[in-house]
Amino acid sequence: MALPMIIGSETEYGLTVLNDPEFDSIATALLLVNSYNVDQSLKLLWDYDQEDPLVDARGFELDDEYDVPDQQDNMAINKVLPNGARFYVDHAHPEFSTPECSNVLDLLRYEKAGERILNLSRIGANQVLPAGRSIIIYKNNSDQKGNSYGYHENYLMDRRTPFQSIVEQFTAFLVTRQIFCGAGKVGAENGAEYVPYQISQRGDFFETEIGLDTMVKRPIINTRDEPHADRDRYRRLHVIVGDANMSEYTTYLKVGTSMLVLYMIEDGFLTDDFELRNPVRAMQAVSHDPTCKVQIPLKNGKRMTPVDVQWLYHEAAQRYVDSAANMDDSFKTIVEEWGSVLERLAEDPMQLHREIDWVMKLHLLTNYMDRRDSDWSDPRTAMMDLQYHDIRPDKGLYHVLERSGGARRVLTEEHIVRSMEDPPEDTRAYFRGQCLKKFKHQIFGVNWDSISFNLGEGPIKRILMEEPTRGTKRHVQHLLDRSETAADLVANITA
Image (cartoon, rainbow, N blue to C red; front, side, top):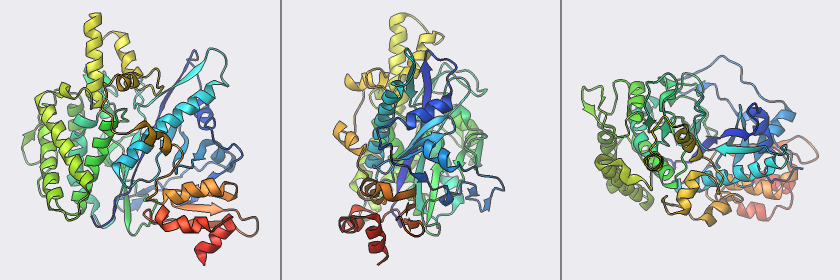
């Protein structure tokens, strides 16, 4: 663990408008973003000058144009929140990006805070819609019409780690981790062979092993090289294969195990041969088999189930946490939970009907079909699939399970609510969030790694924040306390 791993997630939400089948998705997403209860006089630019999404981790840059919104559109589609997060319109979807987090529990509570923020936006937006119409928001990845939208995880890694090592040692983990982090889906899409139910919402939509795209020819390993940090020290691994999960426990396990595997790759700890013969085919085969017993071929000629592959990673992780000095106990807990889940997946996945999204949903749907004497062709079954992801606390089927004790909790509601307003205290998100609270009318623009101040006189002053582990409460609280204005802050920082 040469460098601490800073993490975050980005969630694109699905939309529909009741009683308006021809609704404009872009206009609806704009309405949602601008309906959140923030100071409407706060006009901030998202600093696109600091972004470069066309650089490829394999050592080249695409010769293409990157469209940047003009100033008016920029302000309309972007909201930077006092908890350090970004809430914005990405294509035709509202998207919530968590602030930078230092651990899996923080990421989880900010992602869940994002769901609450989206729901408040929905309530506000519905007040201006014509009578009889209302917006419904889904935290899922498929509209069942052939379109998929993303959930992306970000892991800030040591740049000295060879990218090829990540490709060779992380791909099999991503392909097989679906068995405990899939969100579940009725049917198949994107030309895939029909199945009544599958593990992953995204499994049918990946068509290549490695690449820069996120919307077409989606790759299992994304090569975007945009660290939002010191490029000489960091690489941000942009993971696009994950499902958007409702279950707190599923997200906890998904992100926690991924962090552990990436730490092992950074430290050169993995020695087993993990490479799959055809990762794209394996991605779909694993998703299409809720028994978790499908045999997938490895390059070394062996055939293994996804549970077997995960056991290889788990056994390495157990050795890693046992041998590493000063290992945080939270990772030891993750290894324990990981092993418990794999045992139950091997025996009978339905034992996980309180923990893992795809099992929770399958349990719900099969019970419904048994009671109604119906089958997978019943359109109400597909509707229940969608309703599982409805973020409305009083309507969504996941929330029904949560209230009835049918969903294992990891967080308290108090932690989630507090995360809607307060930034993490141990990453640079603290400085960003506190500046937005204290100097909001003097901020000109914001990015993940910079804040620009308009001091009234002279040029715009940009403060770079290329080190994500600085700007924490411990580092900057004394500066904030003795700075009455943004000009004072800039002077104190540069003194």
